[in-house]
Length: 248
Image 1 (cartoon, helix red, strand yellow):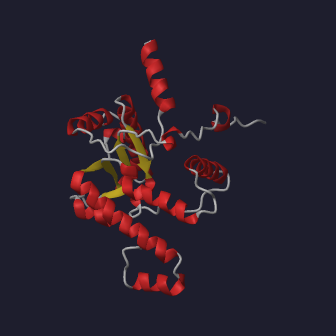
Image 2 (cartoon, helix red, strand yellow; image 1 turned 30 degrees about the vertical axis):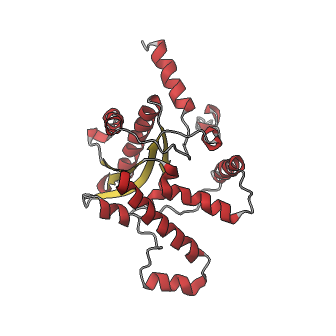
Image 3 (cartoon, helix red, strand yellow; image 1 turned 135 degrees about the vertical axis):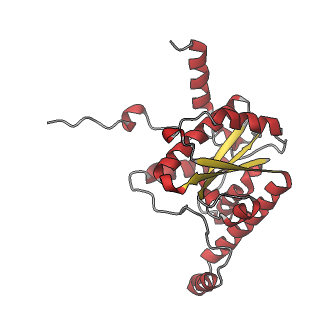
């Protein structure tokens, strides 16, 4: 039978975890990063294949990747407003603005999920004091993804392509385990799908095995006291999540 203390501790971690979007500059000791990964490696996976790998960047390497990814984001932002001829020129010259990720990070959301996405975005920008019509401020906030929100550590998660959706499933379980381990140690995290948009700089920095595809990134560090870190978009209740039994 489960220990009440363990049950309460797990429930508290699950309910208090937030996506941290502003980090302290304080470094995270290497042994603490290793300890978190050592916890996360016990996550379950399909036939215990553990079809994922992690690239960890700190210090100068992290700063280099931040600069390169932010440069690509800036180029892509200019391209979006540049008209058809600029876009064609970018395509023909293989501009760095063009995404080179292994997965498409831009897609249409299903109609039934769009209200949650919008509500979360509106709530976040309201917390930050960014008006809906303030495109420049919204762009600056989006750019923060590629600055890792100031985190001193960024992890890049790769999955084995042959397992398809199941390697992604296993990586998700691994990520949740990692985030909870970090939370238990007072650290914060932010899973970032946007960091899968450009794989080139990451592949240039790490010896990534050919069969592994970049899925996403994860910012890791000590949360600052910025108000954004208290933002809580909430969750659907259990009844809304359950699929009802068919009735005759």
